[in-house]
Image (tube, rainbow, N blue to C red; front, side, top):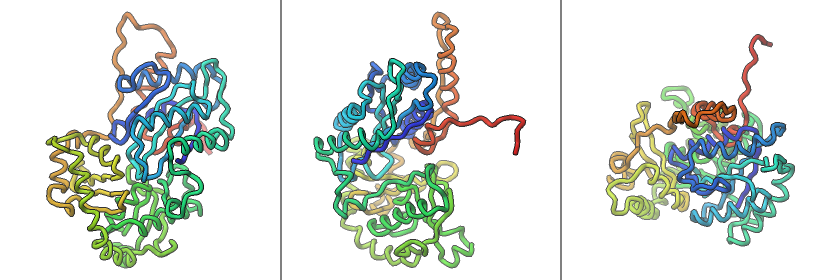
Length: 410
């Protein structure tokens, strides 16, 4: 298990980041601590208010938002109850057992993982020291949980296990610098060597999980005509960011010439795993004629299968690609059979065209309850502004946006 602890000063942004993931159908809030209400019944307003009730007790603290991610090996399939137990014991182990926190299970990566949102401001207004918490408290808690639940250890893995890599944190990448080039190169080498893909779009379906894409250039361009290939970082919307890297500069040279050889070989190598993928898709529907898109994505994620819906500018789904991260094969739905193509699958899914993010609205306060409460006014303002946030990572979500000063220019 890999544990990561980050801190910042924007609990609203951090909460909104995870709630938007829930709205997109790629996350679920599975547990709470000190909210005194079942998570299914907690509103955004109630979640934010509970955190603020702690944060307002210390106005001097420069850090009041804490984000934890616990990441498991792709071979592991901890169920919801186990994830809740691990989250609670981990938080107790790092000294946050008496803090309010929310646990979110995410389904948007190749490996099982949870995000935990909390604050380091205690009920008495004092702060929990975060200095080197990752090196000491977090490490001790992680090791204990690995033993108790027989988890794949973050240290001492075999060579095969250590090949597993995580998505690149785009917001922390230093574009054009060696660290970013190394991260992209590691992701590309791992994917091109281990997965069975038969086209560049199929390769990109896998790379998308690591925030990377392969770019052939626009049709008719010099790069396209000369069969050039670039690898770039992408954000959560799939947009290329930063400085791209030439395929020829990556160790192993995963150029288009190399990939085209792999396409032919992979076509044969992926066939034995076709049946498992089809059976997993069938199992999602069971005897039901239709299910929601979110339920479909979540059910396949539990089987380590990533689903990519390809849409045009009007939002119409014209293709669907399945990445089986367990057997490391990629199939377009139509390659599995007519009943697994984009048209057949989308006809059986509900809420397929629902917008990814819904604006958060505030219900009017009954007159009897209206009070000149400055904290309530601030809360309402925060909630109204929350819909404007579109963070690409928890780290960026915790950073407060600075207002530009008027009348000053350099």
